[in-house]
Amino acid sequence: MQSVTPASEPDSRPGTYALLLRIATADVVAIGRHYRLPLAPGWMVYAGSAFGPGGVAARLAHHRRLAVRPHWHIDYLRQYVALEAVWFSHDPVRCECLWAAVLARELGGMPPPFRFGASDCRCPAHLYGFRDRPAWAAFVAALKARCPEHAAVVEQPLIGDC
Image 1: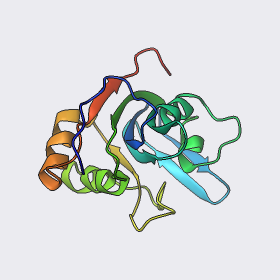
Image 2 (image 1 turned 60 degrees about the vertical axis):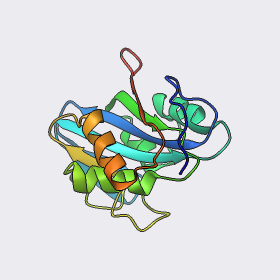
Image 3 (image 1 turned 180 degrees about the vertical axis):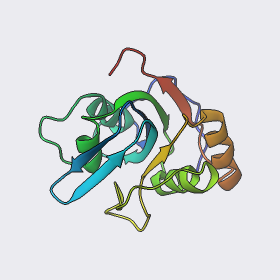
Image 4 (image 1 turned 180 degrees about the horizontal axis):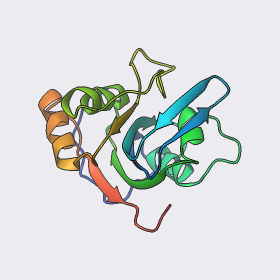
């Protein structure tokens, strides 16, 4: 992986991102027709990649809106949680599985009861739950420990966004 200069705003380059989602109340939500996801007050972090048209900026713009016709697992969940911040990297290598592993192993995230967001890989999930908001600095340190050449990761709060 090559190093790139961090940008404070996501742009049309490809990359990897994480959505920091705040859960206000306990609930059980339908994720598509097949799954039910229990929610508890706290936080969830979803790791994804953006290698299609428009790159990271387009994918994050999609996630900031509530989907009229949900397509991905995360589209269903977004209707019930607040998007508080995003972490992103314009690394030209797909890193979402690495990011999910760091969320689970190094940060102690709890996976959902099904392979949320991981239908196209072998990961247990790309969504992990936390009682407290995971720290960006701890995530970056754990990521760099696993992959020293990983590109810079930017944190962007979304105050008043969603």
